[in-house]
Amino acid sequence: MVALLAVIIGLCTMFVYIYQARIMSKQLHASVWPYLETNYSEGEQGVELSVENKGIGPAKVRQFYVILDGVPHRDEKEKLDSLLTSFIGENASYDYTNVINRVLKPGETVSFLKFTDPRTLKKLDSALKGHRVEMEVCFCSVYDDCWRKRGASIEPCDTCDE
Image (tube, rainbow, N blue to C red; front, top):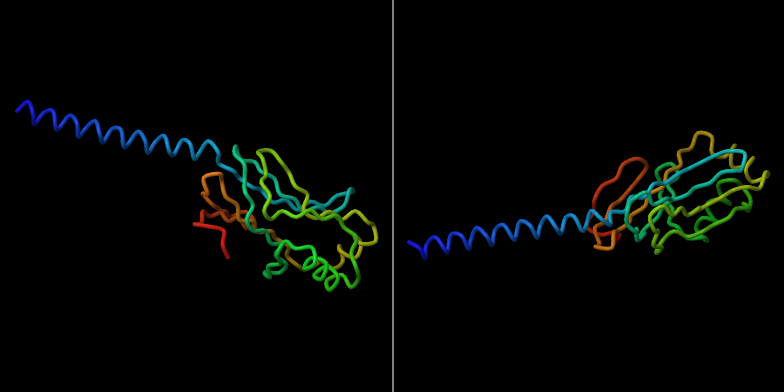
């Protein structure tokens, strides 16, 4: 009887430790949870597309797209140059910073595209009327938990591989 009670107590202790280890693992993952927010802003300073990490952990950006009328355009300067040239009819003047393969620390903002030239802004403003611009970003935590964010929706995903 004593041996049976010792085995039962040992099994209960083992299950408690396993449960506690699961809870601690979830706490560790939550303590480095990134949350990226994409922003499109217009104002007197110009037009800016940016990405900000509002989470509490670093975010490894694996994919980033500008989506124009449902068609994704990858974060590559040459592709964006071509898109903007075809869209506004001439070479656009803008500031560019790539987002793919960056690690954004908590609170960090990256200005992806910024248009400040008045001539480009005027052409861009008239060209964007009736069009929808969105951004999609796939990012991972330091534990390789990954999420895909498009517009306001965010979904967990296995990886950010295409």
